[in-house]
Image (cartoon, rainbow, N blue to C red):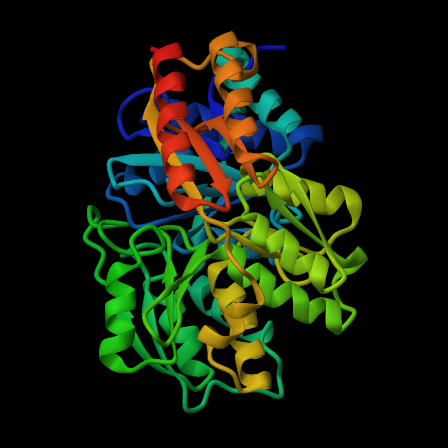
Length: 451
């Protein structure tokens, strides 16, 4: 089998109009997706959604052309969040869903990720098979006769379907009446649906990042840049601020004081309540190696535990499904409630947090105190290549010495970015100054070793 050359940790991703993110590759990927999901002589039905990047139009048309050229039908839903595509794929009984988005990346980038009929991201094995179909050239011999090409149609009410779905995850005995909420949609895929969800549940909504122009997605806004959100929360005297990323599968919050609340803190709040209500399966939360040790300690105090995976929400979901867990997420704001969704959903996660606030009558600044954060420092260093870090002697020696300096009161995590030529080094410890120093030192060691 051909080694993985196209798919990374979250689909195919890269700079738009530069290989592999070219129209030609998108067309062939569309053909491969159609071929994979139309096996056995049946005609597949495939959903295509996108975010607000200018290049999405180009890839949408190329993907649709490729799919139809293989005899499958296409349903176009336009700009919608990634979790919306997952939901619609499943609810409309489609064979697959395609999301054209580079998530939190700048507009120059784009990506293609694929969901199966069940609304879950494809496993590695399925991506390998699709990739092999693209790279082997076998698609040229699979094209049907001209009278068998597929058709395309638009699903005009897709946004409304998703809004209704999100609202139905919120407890039916509660409303958002009287709450003032600031929402930053990052000029991305949630710019229409997110304000609608919270307004229809009764909140007074102040919207930021709802004027996409094809180039401003994620620009100084959204989950990666919550500064404007925090300022707006204090200016409007809001009860909560919600910052979504470009494709809406993650969220970062601001409490009523204008302070950032990340995914670890939200997981601590949510999980401790789920444990108390006996709704957290096996009293276990699944997160990644990047989650703060403070989350682990908060769960232990409440009678729960934390299971860690490699970085990437897909690996969190895989562990949840394999072991029967129902809640997990990432520090970056991917929160997965498998009782409701099949992937990270920023809107749904915010609604569950709001339900806790309303039931307990407490502000977010008080709820977040359930977790005490350990100082955590992350440095990103550019690399020219990506040899396995565990095989680089000087890197492992530096890590061992750093762990001795932490004296058992911290953690060191190093990994490569799945989408960029960067290495990420995280140091966590009781002393913030020492954590900064160690992270900088280790970052330089990794950078030199991978130059």
